[in-house]
Image 1 (cartoon, rainbow, N blue to C red):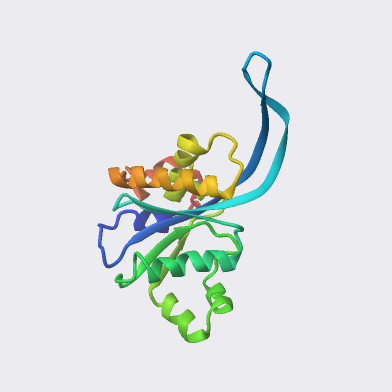
Image 2: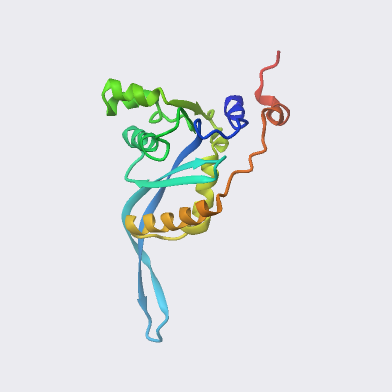
Amino acid sequence: MEQVLSVYQRPYDEQFPLVCIDESPKQLIEIKSYRSSDGTRMEDSDYIRHGVGEIYMVFEPLAGRRLVEVRDDHKAVTWVGIIADLLDGPYANSTKMTVVGDNLTAHKPSAFYTVFGAERARSYLDRLEFVYTPKHGSWLDMAEIELSILHRDCLNRHIATKEALVAEINAWQTKRNAKKAKANWQFTTKDARIKLHKLYPTV
């Protein structure tokens, strides 16, 4: 926990960006609807499942920037692809990128070697610093906050197709990035040692 909190105290540096990553599934559900005799739109209680879209939220809190991708799963290969795309794309000129994320088994640096050859995998890992939230501490990942805002703003309803889901998310992130909405993170290590003192061992 303190490692995550200390990372959040770093000043903004374009060459050493800090990004938070989290993912969340969204069920794709089509609701059957029809018009009654008086023209009122009615929804059937029956519905059709169209699978799941896995939403990956990449949030750079100090720059007020988020990059959201919709993929088909949350496997290690997919996670590696998301991070590699960041290093090859928007963060291609960065020296080293710090990634804050949860400690799932799919989120391991070794997964880069299952996707890429050893030389390329090493070149990616040399430009990465991984900082993991502790068990039961996913709330420390600021990408989780952005995901909750995304769900509140435009995903708190049924969406039938992956294409519609992508369109909704793209419109949301374009608008939110234009505002450069940053995270006002105020919980520090000092606060943790006071408010969460029961988590610390007694010396």
